[in-house]
Length: 229
Length: 79
Image (cartoon, rainbow over all chains, first blue to last red; front, side, top):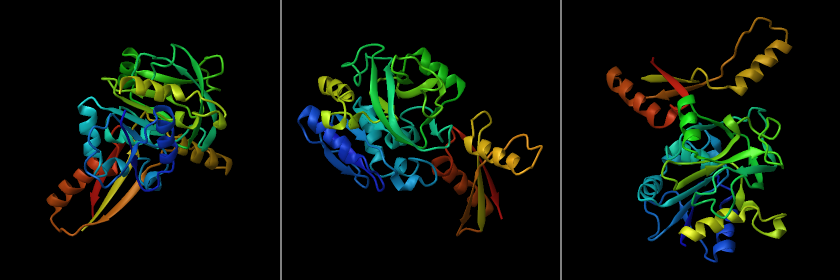
């Protein structure tokens, strides 16, 4: 599998993302600077990592979403190529319009940096096939703007089509207000596009890959991608 | 010519910052504030003096970058 990790000014999780791909797949991703206009030949997966591109100025991800490289990312997604947006990457991918909705300020108004539980609601995607339906995994989060919002029609469509892949839950898989760190509608932590080749999520699976990090619950996502790409 | 763009959250979109401001106003003793919505004001200094051209240009800027029309409305004033 050939992967690429996009790099924007202000991004800070690109090396974590690159390491996760390398550890799980054995192949180092290509780092792609935002001023490039083409992705490297033969790239299967484009990862948009977390951080604070352009200092979150204007809106989180807004300026990065208008970078020169983005047209190439759109073409890649249109061809059916995989796109993984994590944290700021999820914000960027929604700003591009590859995924619906938007990430708003956390309901608590606080930046939340902790470990949460996620329930895998769709293990049939290219990103989640290594998990089982309803499996509860641990995953770190670190964001101030992860409060998923979509208008009622969009939300109904996402739910109706089963495109909510990850939901915040407690350790037993129950979705409760208390287990939701940011106030996301329907406790949404991650969604896919209609075609299933673009995933956006606020939590950081790339930060739970090796025992040294305190767990390996995030590996499944990268293992899933390695199976299809 | 100067353009002033006001970006506000659409109705129905939760505004936690507005809520916090409302709470702060209440705690300062300002009673009777039923709701607070926070937005952004962006001022642009434009080279053109043609109002129609400016309006079209700034509208394009709003659609492309300045506002996220999924969650925000924008209003343009030319001054």
